[in-house]
Image (cartoon, rainbow, N blue to C red; front, side, top):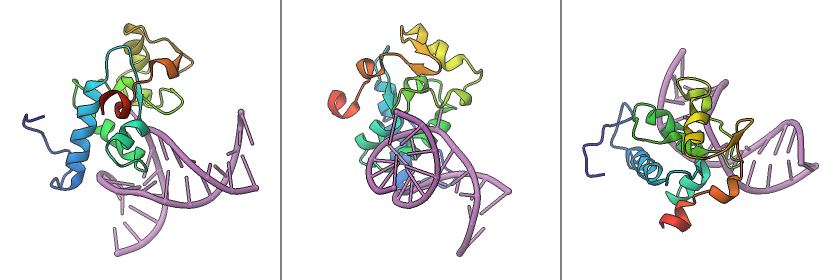
Length: 122
DNA sequence: ATGGTGACGTCGG
DNA sequence: GCCGACGCCACCA
């Protein structure tokens, strides 16, 4: 995290930077074979009501291959962000590579493999 | 500046 | 349990 962090927004210097940075930090920490939700990340960052911003952060994460954005799904375990990947099946395939079963754009056994940064990372 | 939109989530009906 | 409305806040036209 001490690495040179590229500003995401046109006008960096806002808290947004810190927020985005934290989002990336958390997402990178998601263990392989586990998934988390936008809301959980938002809560962990103290912005529980701004889950959308996490999604927006993921949009920026688009430029960061190191960010396993495929491990972030919505609260139902649905791959809502699959459309933002290069190909339609890319997100699902990435998950399946990690032994995460996906059926009909939904993570199977989601509750079991759910990784909560608040309780796991804290 | 203003209004519409969105990788979300919660609440009321 | 499904559906609509609202909140939240950055971004874009």
